[in-house]
Length: 126
Image (cartoon, rainbow, N blue to C red; front, side, top):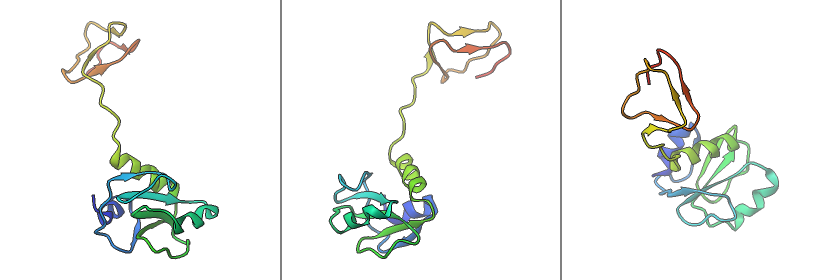
C-alpha cells in the first residue's frame, strides 16, 4: 500500500514521498525497508537517524526527518489505526458452539458465529 493512501485513511499530513510502498507496521527497532514505524516520545527521536524504516508516524510538532513521515496530533492513535489497516483479526468460523444456549424462536443466519456459553434470547435475530 502506498504511504499517501495510508495518510488519507488515517487523516495524517504527509511529509515526503507518498509513493513509498508500505508492507507492514512495526516498532522502530525492528523496522526495515517497506515498514512504517512511529515515534511519539521525544526521547526516541534519536533512533530515527538509524532506523531502516521506509516511513514514520510523528507528532505534528516533531522536527523534520529525512524519511517520509505522517504527521498527526496523536501518533499513538495513528499507529494503532495503521495496525488495523494491515492486520485484521481472524473471522470466527460460522456455527454454534455446543455450550451455547439458544432460544427456540431465535433466528440464526448461516454466517453467524455463536461462541462458548453464549446466550441468544427469545426473539433474537442474528
